[in-house]
Structure formats: structure tokens, C-alpha cells
Length: 162
View 1 (cartoon, rainbow, N blue to C red):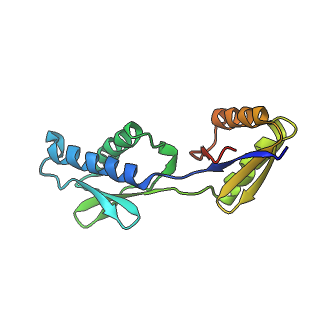
View 2 (tube, rainbow, N blue to C red):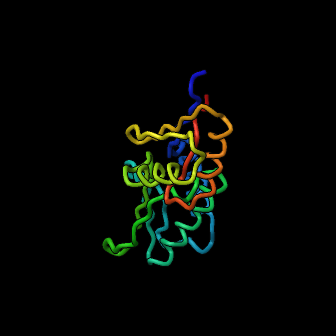
């Protein structure tokens, strides 16, 4: 019998992120505490750009955006947020969505699988993904549970389970 396998990836659904940003944009425009302070949130290339008249207001816009991401099922681990910085009379905050598993994180996950997963489970790094294979599907499901319970800095999804 051939080995069963699945892929571990870290991807953000661009449409869901766009919907979350649009909802946050509507809320920022309608909320009373954001009136007349130049508050806005929008895409700036691949990054999300938030603007307001003070660092606290920019962080409040970020909180609104994070709440919308959570409602849309996007993990906050896939959001990479910078620090607020002054730009003229306004403050700006940039955030980007992480896609793909970085090499260091992939090595960390691979080591975790080697150390703590059932014996017959093997993993190999393929670019920004990780392929996990084993003869036993039960071992693969135990490995998925192990990875879900692990405290990693990456939002993980499991695809191509065969």
C-alpha cells in the first residue's frame, strides 16, 4: 500500500482578507470616535495601511481590523504588524499578511514531527510548504492534532490529505 500524506501550508484567503478590510473600513467611517480625525484603512499594494491623527487611534483601527479578521476565520498569526510612525500631521501603521511557511519555522515544525509524532511519520520541506507522509492514516491524524496543539508562530492549514 502506498504512503498516505498531507501538506502543511500557511496561506491567507485574499478574498476573506479583503472582505474583512472592507467591513473594517465601513465601521471606521461610521463610528463616532473616528469622526474628523482622518481615520482610514485601505490596501496599499500588498500591505494594509491605517491612518489617523494619533498613535492610539491607529491602534484602535488595528483592533477593529483584527476583530473583522477573526470573524472571517483568519488567524491573527498570519498578520504581521509594524509600529505606528508619524508622517506629516498623521500617524500611519502598516500590516501585511504572511503567506507561506518560512524556512526556520518549517525546520522547527519538521523537528517537532521527528521528536513527538508517531514513529513512521516523515516530513520534508518543499519550498514554503511541508509534506508529511506515513503508512498509517491514524498516525497522520495524530500528527495533525499534535501540530494544532503546538504553540507555533505560524497559522497552519492542512491540505491534500490522501
